[in-house]
Image 1 (cartoon, rainbow, N blue to C red):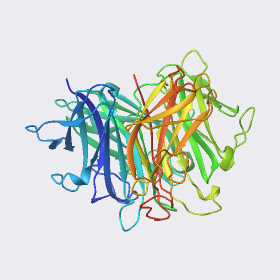
Image 2 (image 1 turned 30 degrees about the vertical axis):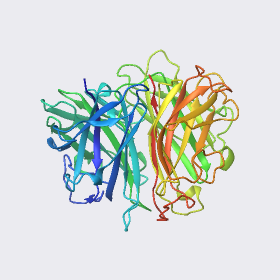
Image 3 (image 1 turned 135 degrees about the vertical axis):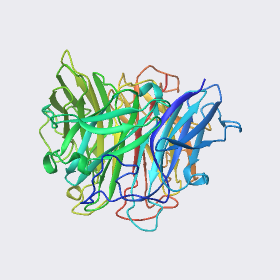
Image 4 (image 1 turned 180 degrees about the horizontal axis):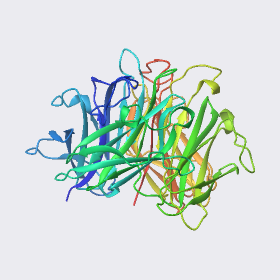
Length: 500
């Protein structure tokens, strides 16, 4: 039986993105992204089985129409060895014309999928990049939650891309928006129209459909999208065009939990700062809880149903206990987000940026979002690792949520990389795959691979400490193929996949 992974948005090379701010635009829905750029992308598929090969097929849709089955139905399925990785570079599929597509990946084994989208190969700006995770069919629903929706919020806009997972039934979509206090910002649901079977549409806050929503300093809110008839999948894209182009992406949520983890937060860490957005997805009870940083500082929140709040990790000293650490040594840390009230259920995302205020006024493009994991496991799948690879390298941040333990990466070729000492509870280990890092097992060899992050003892034997993982692809002047297009946003960031 083939399992399905839904990919709500794939933007292909030669797609000419429309500008975010078109004064005469009156759009209820889009067939293309609002983010400026000329895009290319890759779909990375990791077979999570440790014993069996996977047979994989990909169906590509434009709107609701099937335009390509890859491989052809008469051909054998793509084969991915146990623990193997397949990188499908979309421009290599000559059967697809220019345009924006969605896709469904089907496999006879459970697979983990990540999508990496970039315009940095283009000769002219904008040079931006973002990444997100494919949505397992089991993680779709008739209600989607987006903790960080924005409308001209310090120049940031967002859009949601919604895919109908039914192959036979159309559905009607509506959207609601909530302030940090839980106030519903639209008096009646905003009508998003009909979404055909297998269809995908894009809805941008810069469009006239959302004229009634607040903008500017109050233009940050929680968003809920409802489907009348079928399960849907979705992602949110966030972008800015001034003072430079930046883009990011994260996955929609269908449910929450009482605990979530932020494996990597930053405060003036090589010019980076982070923002943590938390949404209460409980439809009845208020969520009261805490954000506890690995250094000991605490933030507190109280969120009405559907409300969302944003905590900045820079330029603030309002935490209880230890202030948030900063700088190139101490300015990277983790956090545990926890509901302490009887009711309430939360989801969370983290945004990164290198803003001018943290970089002496310099304009830099780096920007990304990631979904905060809520299900730690002793083994976590890392779908993609790059070392000295066409301008990119990978940093893997592993947060230990249990008892102190060593953490080890095991790569496809059997190489391992283990921390020299146990990682404390809620501590993080960073595995930086720069060639100039003497601990990088690949050295200067150009490498694209995958890995498993494991909790182990000093001899490499498994322990039971649960982990969560963050994967960050970025660039550096020391990396082979570095393009040096500054300011540019090269960040691809997404969470690892728990190994069941």
